[in-house]
Length: 268
Image (tube, rainbow, N blue to C red; front, side, top):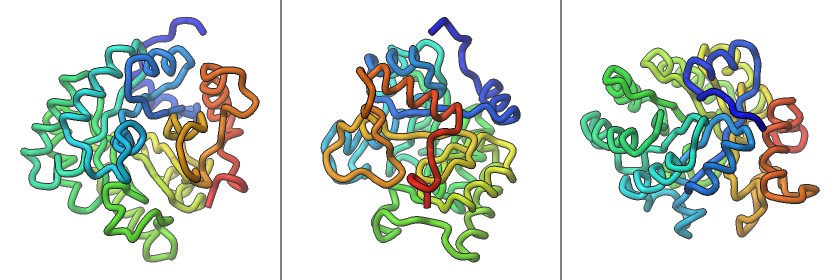
């Protein structure tokens, strides 16, 4: 595809406002960074999912800020136009806002355009503290992998009236604190659709149905090179594709057209 302009927060918000779907995939190295960017992926997420995908851990918890800085630098080195978000790993922001600024600064210096923080409630002052210091923040609600043990495993979040209302409140508080993007993970499709409609920032879903402003998957999952059983919300885009490049372009095309996800097959 032809050269495209640099993706910015302003451009992503324009996409939200005009209902142009946003395609996001995880990325951990320069080679995939260039490949995903060339295929038209809008946002590259340097996820702490690298703990499982790259390092072979059972969860994201062992990932360090040094790991995230290294992989962010690799992704930034291969990228030309996509927006790059880097996860703040477990233990890099729980202690204090000052600790969060220190870690976020390292990620931004490594080439991230934005950092992502999991959870609501107690994270609101941290988000505000970072944004006031010029660090863009993406919030992450629903199932938050860094809290997998506290949540009792990989479970759908926001079921029931009280849980849905709490998720809505947390999302609103985070946006009011300055979060400029939100990832919703493992949330019932109807709740995600309603929440997306109520927020004036791009909302990206993963296992949250088709009503979000965009979709994200772990690249290794959608290429069917992850060991073990894949979650219901994942589609194998290698099926019927002749190459990795073709599979990624198909993902982008189906997110943009609204063909993926299919709520009946991939939603909750």
